[in-house]
Image (cartoon, rainbow, N blue to C red; front, top):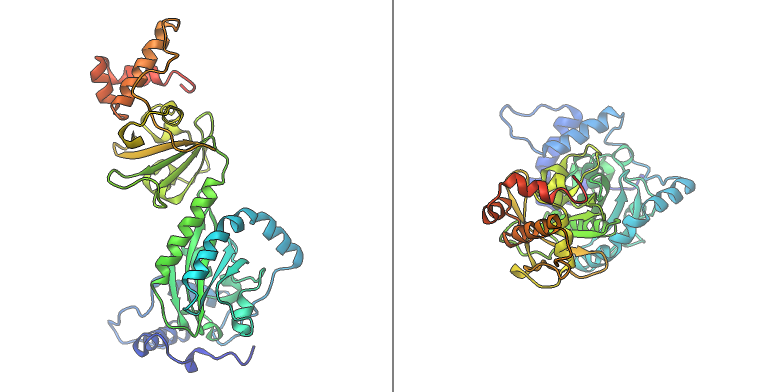
Length: 387
C-alpha cells in the first residue's frame, strides 16, 4: 500500500494546467490555503462537497484507503439481491469491454451501496491498483475510499467525470473515472456503472458513454419487470423503437408496474417518488383500455403509432406491445363482436372507442365528431374496468 504514488508526484496525463488547477483546489479545500480574491471555482461543486464530507468523516488525504471487502455472508446476500441487475448489465458490460479495449479503461458495476458486483474490460490483474478495485465484493463507497465516480454518482444521482487529484485520497489520484447511476423500474437508485483508467489519458467523453450504457441497463431492468403490456413513449417527431424511448410496464388492470427514467422524465406523474400506486388513467388523458386495444388488433394505423394525450396538455406518441408478442396496432373498424346481439350501451361504447381511435386519442375531436360533450366521452369510456 505504501508504495502507491501520491498525487503530487504522479505524472501529468490530463494537461499541466488542468492538474495544476486541481492541485490548487486541493490546497484550498483540503488544507485551507487561501486563494486570491475573485478566483473562479477550480473544481466542480459536487467534488468540493464530497471532499468536505470526507473531511467531516475524519479522513485525511494522506491516508491510504483499505479497499476492504464486505464479509462473505454480506457478499452472498449482496449478489443474491442484485442478481437481476447483474443479469441485465452483463451484455452491456461485454459491449463496453469491446468499446474501451484500447483505452486502458475498464468497467465496474456496483450496487446502490458502492459494492462491486461485476466487472469487464482490459483489467491487468498484475497491477494491484487495478486488482484491488475490481474484486467482486470490494466496498468502493465514499465512506471507504473517499471521492470517486462511484461514490459521487450514487450521491449526486447524475453522471460524473473525475480525473486524478479530484479523488480525495492522494493514493487514489492515479485513477480517472466516469460514472452514472442506475435506476430500477421503481424509480429508485439500484446501483451505478463506472469506467476507470489507471494513469491513463483523460477521456471526459467516457461520461457520455457510461451514461448511455446505464440507460441500456435501466431499459433491460424495466423490460424484465412483471407486466402484461409494454408501452413505448416518445415525443412527436422522434422515431419509436430505440433506447431513448420511455418504457411503461402495465398489468392487466392498467396498473403501472414499472417505468424507466426516460418515461419518468416525459410523464410528470411518474417522476413523483411517493411510492403510491399509479394507474394508466393517472398518466394519460384517455381510457387505459385503448392501449390494450392498440396491442390486440392487427391492422396498422398511422404506422402503428398511437397519439397519447397527457393531463398536462402535452402529447406523446406511443406503441403498445403485449408481453410475449410483437407490437400490434389499432384498427379503424369495429371488432367482429360488435353485432346486433350487443346491448345499445355496448354499441355506443364501441362507437366512442372507434371515434377516439380515429382521432388518434384526441378526446375533444372525437366528441365533436360524435356530437356529444367531452365529459360524455370520458364518462362512457371510463365506465369499463376502472371508473
